[in-house]
Length: 304
Image (cartoon, rainbow, N blue to C red):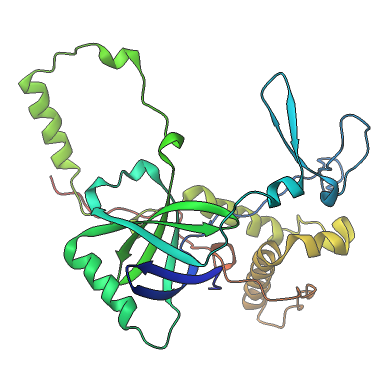
């Protein structure tokens, strides 16, 4: 993994140097749109609806529209804002863990120690574990002030971004104000049904069948020769823009197909054409890992 941010956790006189890593990744097969007649890549342009010209990114400003008037905000306007650019994760308070509502949680990041001495990192980690507290912190990422929860997961400090209070909508549903009579017998039967489904949560027991079958479909089309030549269809520029994820997935699938043909034929299979290398190697993602053969993971037998 590559660190996306470096800084320090600060509370009181304690300073814990850390590096920030994305804790999650998407396993979806990356797809793009093509013309159904000739397979040509569909691209979107930033076109001005007033003059009709295609606008370069450096000539684009942002605007706020209240429905009647539009206020244009230039890059100079944004640079004049008092945006904090500190490299500190400031602890605001330590709260009971159960008070942090999961609905407020967003992106998760791992915090790894960024110092030869791990004592301050370990001290904070052990303190959070023993007190069963979560630290509410603020920090700046990509020029925006963020609110986050700092907690421990598998002996690693985890920073979980939080929504601000006004970003969570109120659950206002008038139909829920109606009184509903639920009998004791109905509650007893419902509880019995829940008990029949009781189990310990094992994330690995579940799989994304759609993505698994999508990978199998792509592999089957490649094996049947139902594929377009990427360079001839989209050109070198398209390959460079796609980056490592799509190319690595297709390369892995091509090699799997070639190895399968080689095993069946008992001879040497034709080597697949090499794709042009990116400027720097793309990190391994869920897309580049071999597809699992099983399309469904079965749960352990549920106890009645």
